Length: 306
Length: 291
Image (cartoon, rainbow over all chains, first blue to last red):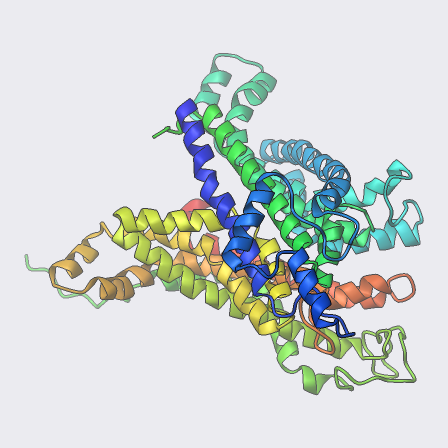
């Protein structure tokens, strides 16, 4: 088990390296420099600027320097927000994005699994059909459609909830979190239902029932444990989905998180900030997938560690 | 007693069976019809609307839908006809969806079939490459690409296609692994067919079932990614438009002009729904034991 964990940990290294390399070289290939302005900058000033940002060195040297800095948690200065480093900007937005995303993933797990079990136990009844049709809707509708529609109905027509902002009142969080959570609830509910139906038919659940366990125990203690394995392995993609979704949601609801910086940075060609956010979120997603794999290996004895 | 020669029984191929099953699935047929209508509307867009998609109607700036002035879906804040713009947006969204999916099929099938058929070290190496790409944050790279190469729609096609072939490669590889042990492949081997021709003639055609299912699920995913990028303002550029760009304009104007949001949302949602239902129906039709 331990050697498996260590091997998986080392297996993530090339992925992380590739992540940094691709981000770096792609941004350097970009036509047009960060100092392209309508007003021509004098050649000496440009040269000084390039020297200050080490843009005059060979590409490989720049990459090695960047990689070393990234390992120390330094993503360099932002090209557009002159007074801040990228690391400061990311840490500034991180608590907000974490609150938003963390709440969303927690809610998605709890509600999704509950609904999935519910639908599985009532397979092929009206409840099941309604739940699964709603889940289909949740999966098919992207959150940049759901969020504006929710805002339109609950924010503007009914005026029940604020339509944007963050941190002044907890009600501001409701619409963004709902919009962010719905697609993942739908996906988790569908997954739980499918694997629960399969588990309920399995021999060990039949044994549990046959030896006279109450239905509740047979379902919660025996069936659910097996049924949750695929749901756990979905957690990696779910986190990636929530992070991606938060880019849009933070933009729509003017929430000062990392996603908003990322969009602004992409539109402004703020090289270092775009790279910084891509690498930061990339590392989170890769590490989360790794954690999920390890947990899965720990929970499922059928996974062989060779 | 010698066997009487019987009338030849018409064989039923897997595909004929699958078609029959698909056509018994009401949701799938309805989706197919709806998609047909949307595609037809998109193709005929220049002839259906009363206005060109980029013409400003100075008398009708941001007006609600009306049949009198023939702005069936209303106009946007520049006085452009939203009916025509929604259909033109559909052209871009659907083209991106289909084109990028084609790219992903070509790369994915070739990569997966080769890796599965060669096996051994080549397979391990090729699939390791897929694993690594798989764990990169996909959407961030599409955005990076669109930042780097400018706002060119063609590059977005290629970029999305180039990163969405990974699932396809995995599926095809899995199929290939089980196919290559089968007798007909062995027979082809024995009769001296080259590996390339075995892959082309015997492996690939037999993987088409799962590929077809996956194609119907890739198209909506790609449309979503394109809308996502256009929504953020990094996709198609004015005066061109796509559903994502229209939704983003709709969000900005939704307080005074909710109709700007409604039409692209409805078109996008219906399209995504239909592809999902069609994909589900196709999966049931091609794999009846999985029901």
